[in-house]
Image 1 (cartoon, protein in one colour):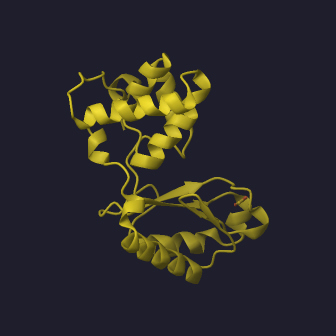
Image 2: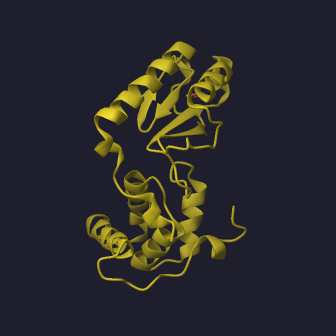
Length: 192
Ligand code: FES
């Protein structure tokens, strides 16, 4: 983890015609056409970048800051504050398990063990093939139906260890059937 914003937000690179850098800049331009260039456009733009690329890189933050005429530190502050934005690369399928008290009492520990076993990763990690990331979530508003997990944007309630296996199997099948659904963007583009 970098120690400072300066390390995290890299300087803007020069446009290179036809390059992926250019395509990211073009993409952010299109997002500003859609959401505007006022400060209130910041979160919707970041959400779109995250949805498409599974990462919000320092370079993307710098571009967004330029387009909205705000400081890169402000953009970084928003990205690092909201766990759903996340500035690191995440897998195509992000599984979040609620760890707040109701889900905790409803058996979230057993669910956590099952997910870690099934995916072979711990919380905060991504599988080597880039398919899955595993994260904790705080209360997602389903306290009376816990344990609750969110898979990308879909909420599952009353989750049991058996249900975890079913959900992961269904995700893998969906991934194999419709890889394009999960292929938007190329995270390498952001590792500049
Ligand atoms: S405590 Fe888990 S959804 Fe509220």
